[in-house]
Length: 465
Image 1 (cartoon, rainbow, N blue to C red):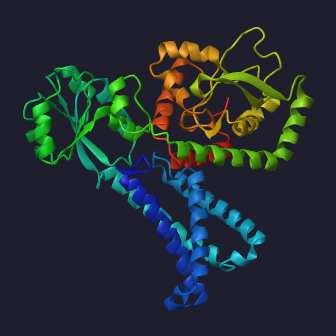
Image 2: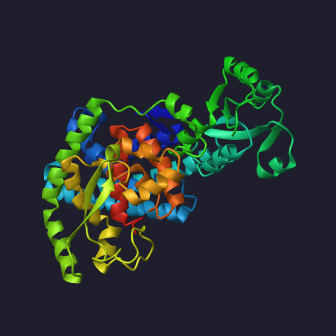
Image 3: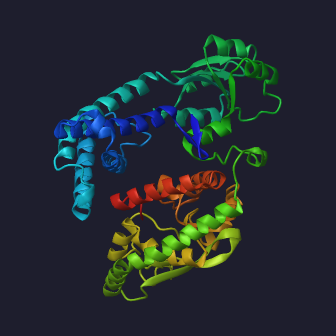
């Protein structure tokens, strides 16, 4: 895997996305060449043509992204794949038609894109079939061996099993002693017993990586054998770090404070904080102005349906555990917690109004929080702000939960876009795994990834309660 801006990406996935972009560019280029009957030298001296082709490429790949064609889990159903490709090209056509109507000067040619569709379908389907073949046969994956057979090893294998784009092929498991139960737990993977001669076993398997996934290392870690592997060029990878790398979350139950202390990350420079604050302020200020007509429409709908205020204000815990009042459009009945007290929202919650269901599904109820961003109480991206009542309970039961409050909470967040709405202690634990990963690896690139994911969720109406 490669690391770019503190984020790990599968090499095969990175090459796949980049290669597909080049194929799209190439398809549009050849359509332009055939229609205009221009030679390559003439095309090469017309830079605007290259920029116009680049615009088509970017919009096409954005359409593929919004149709879940760049998700980590590949699509094995070829009918579904072809359907989504057609939908993506259709969306691209509509977006380009709008852009060309508004800005006629950037149109590359009247029939260019439609001719390109023939090339695109052929190339995209072929490219994705080739990619599926590479993933199934793990042609470019590095062999890896897991040292350990406990819960951490099982968690890693479970997560790796759901990632066909993973750059690692986990070939074997090494256990400290022979155990028939362990053999049954790791079906389909060879199990080697004993920590003697580990390095020779690794070399016999032609493996390049050893993932140390021992639940308890004290008195068990085979230092001499691992050092021998290290000096022979084998990568020795910490199991908790490997789990973080392939999942984008931190295994809170397994890590200890020293792992967090000595691991890379948690960089919060004053410059980065200032830039995030300025960008957030400007974005929220102009966002509220642009969305003012929508705000008025939503306010009218809320007022017409039920009695009570338009906005909902509630105390939440912010950065450094400071209490602030979050602002949202009211999506529940005015007396929603009068009899029940503080409770999480659930599926088909009877307290939610009809208008509330719509604005929750589209996340419109969150938009007034831009006022909290302007005030400096929140950011666009950050952990979800929780109520003091729940925070006090969760801090007692979940390790490292208080670390969430070292950054400003966000309107959207890494955990919100990667995990469904949480309404239990277990959900809070799972979301903390993502929140800690975000805090540890904060960067503008990660914020952009979260924002793009949020836009897709809003457009597709996913994950709300």
